[in-house]
Image (cartoon, rainbow, N blue to C red):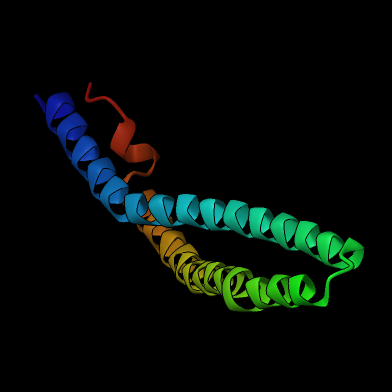
Length: 117
């Protein structure tokens, strides 16, 4: 019976840790998506800058400049701001995770896993 109780307790503790970790995993995935968005925006801006360079018409150059300034740069900044914010939260969780792991190790030392004779 002690083994079953120990197993149940261990499972419960692991589930608690998972509940604490899951939101950070989601944030990490969000960071990756925002990085991908940023890369796409940078590629778009580079293409527009090349179009601008090759464009003869001043009115078309102005339209390209406005698109970069008013749309693409703003989206790039928004993605950057999200990345910075979420990275800050992930860093904070890194410190919390260290505490969680230390607490777990204290609860589940070698003696915990010894079988009764």
